[in-house]
Length: 126
Image (cartoon, rainbow, N blue to C red; front, side):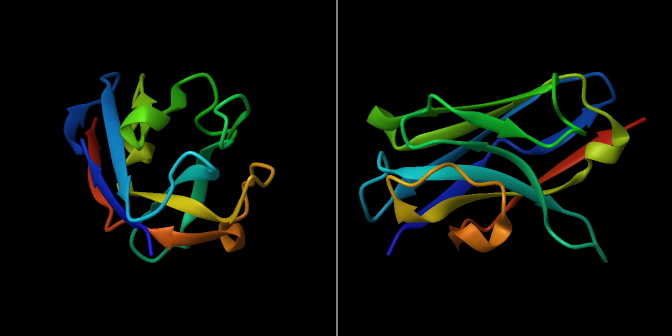
């Protein structure tokens, strides 16, 4: 069973930046696609970004494209989310997740992700 621990959230002013980290343990990290999702109270969890197990393919939600960058360091069992030009509407709890199948094509669908971290709060003030 994989364990995921996110960090790096906090309070930032609009236009600022944060970098989220997610460290994985418990199974081989490098053969699974990884994703970041976010959720606000009363809303469903939504896709933010995903990266393939090799790190060569990335996908982004339209709302963050051009502002957020997902990356991974397989030697450190870590996936990152660099968030620039933050907006108040980016305020949410951010979760990292690992895809269910090894060596699979990167997915943007929440149903394809089977293990989740506890989340880290990101608050963007206007």
